[in-house]
Every structure is written in structure tokens, then in C-alpha cells.
Image (cartoon, rainbow, N blue to C red; front, side, top):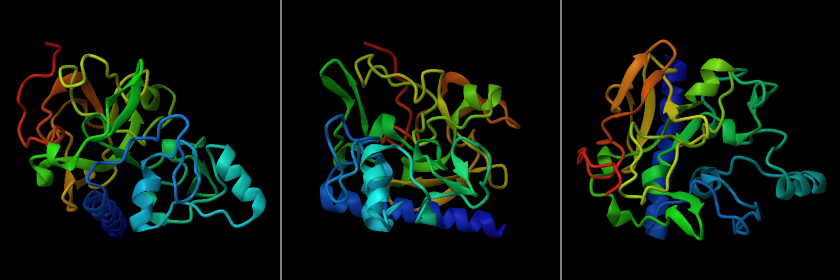
Amino acid sequence: AARSMANLSNLRSLGQGMAMYLNDRGSFPPLRLPAGQVHEETGRPRARWHWAIGEYVGRPYSPRTPEEHNDFLNTSDFDRLDNPVFQDPTQDVEDMRSFESGQIQVLRCGSYGYNYQYLGNSRTQGTRFINYPVRDHKVHAAAMTVAFADSGGSQFLRTTEGFREHSYSLDPPRLDLRRNGGATGWGHETGPVVASLRHRRKSTVAFVDGHATFHTLEELGYRVVDPEQWLVEVNAGSNALWNGLGYDDGQTEEP
């Protein structure tokens, strides 16, 4: 129970960090900065969303030596996690590729995922971003729109190989091909990145308005196939808590 409450505090902090980011910037952070762009405050190339939110809740990592700084600017990994707000306290060695000495070292495969499909899909199709930037006014129901949640990574790789791959992203129950012109795909090439049930058989979820609560996969709109393995039916269910509207408008196919 104590670790669940600590994790809830983490998600609440991330949600409040998002609210402050929106207040200052007026738009949502990208899933990851586009190629050629760096995080202004740290110089981190192609920084993931953690660094944008980290300006409000504390950075995930701060290099301490010239060698660490050089690695920070040139590699995806780092020697430690300096801010525990980015790590679920129940996780230690769930994915050995991501952890060492009980600490996340690859935020790509960390604890929490971002509702990037609707808030900041900075992946590209040709010369255009799929859904980025997204202004804050596009979200009509902030208290009913997922920002971050416990993430299990690609459900295919997690169940077949034990890898929590690309858990920094988080997919809604259905792909919104209509909104994104048929260009978008799942968080990982193998399939959707799905919320995980690490606490009381529920996922800890932070919403765009900054509040955080526990939800089942069904409450998040997924059609569950196997609750023990957090498996859901692919491209089925309701996007009501994801699309910024507060309801599922029923239209996600290409026009």
C-alpha cells in the first residue's frame, strides 16, 4: 500500500508538471524532440518527454563529471536515475535491459508512458509531424484526458520476451487514423503499448488537469483479453479518456 501511494504521488507530480508546462508554453510536449533538436536547458539531443516535464519536477539525471556529460550528450543511457519521481517504487529488475542496481537507466523502457497519440505525436510521416504540436485548447476535458500512466511497454514483447519496450509511450485503445490522416501507428512496431496494472490490479493515471487516480484497464477504455497479463484486444474499445473530448465520438477510421 505504501508503494502504491508513493507511485500515486509520482504520477500526481508528473501531472502537475504537465499543468505547469502547459501554463508556460500553451502546448503539450512532444513524445520526443525531432531529429536535430536538443533540449535547450541541458543540450540533451532528441530528448524524450521526461526532460520537458523535468524542468518542473526535477530532471531525471544530472551529469556530475565531464565524462558523464559527454555520455549524456551522445548516448541514450545514463549511469543512474537522479530523480525517483520517474520510477515506480515497485519496479527493480522487471526488465534487465532497463535496470542496473535497481535503477532505471533507459527511460525509453521506464515506468511511465505518455498519451502521445493525442497530445504530442512528434513522429513523422514524410515531412510532417503526425500530431504535433498540440495546443492546450485542443483538449476540451482536461480532467478526463490521460496524460501519463503506469506503462507495460509493447504488450507483444512483454508477454513473449519479457521486455518492457517503448514504455515511455502509451497507446489508447484504438488508433485514431481519422485525426492523423491515416499516418499513425502503435507505440512499438510490434503493437500497442498498454497501461500496466502494477498497483491493486489497477493502473495509476495522471490526467491533464494534474490529478491522479487508480483505474482498471476497462475503465481506461480497453477491451481486456487477459487481465493477469494485461493483454487487451488490439484496436478495440473506447478512446473517451484519451482524445481530449471526454467522450468517444466513435470515429477513428480514415475518412
